[in-house]
Length: 220
Image (cartoon, rainbow, N blue to C red; front, side):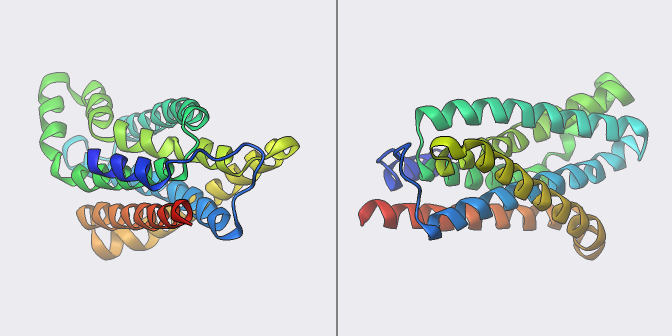
């Protein structure tokens, strides 16, 4: 993760001026990041519930735990992302966060032992909640930082409201697509572990693409 963040800071060392709108290619890439982030959040939420089910079953406690952890993670990510975007308004940092989230998502299927340990120590309800938080809080939190960052990079002057609404609309449509693709195709066709890996690859590829474009823009 440190390597990814270092690449981000060097790829986009110059802050984005508040009064200048990024080029068309950069804007499309930023909006693509919002779509991918929204889709990945729902993919991880559904895959997380599937990962919990062998230990905790398909009970209401599992879904309550997974949804609660997702909401808390996104809330923390929104706050952190807004603060970081104002402090370091660099496209490279946005894409570093996406790539780092992908790395963390790839680790998730290897943490099944956390589910079992929490169940033995805490029982069904508390175990489902705490194991969800331990495994998914950080990747989902990083994904929560994306939309505020995209808004900061795209917004100019009096268009902040329109930009914010558009980014959250696009991100939400990404979430709808992520829900349908994951639930109707990804899990049935590939299974839970492979679903995590495919989601991770999509995030890392998006992050690498954005870092490459940011590096080219800063070198121009």
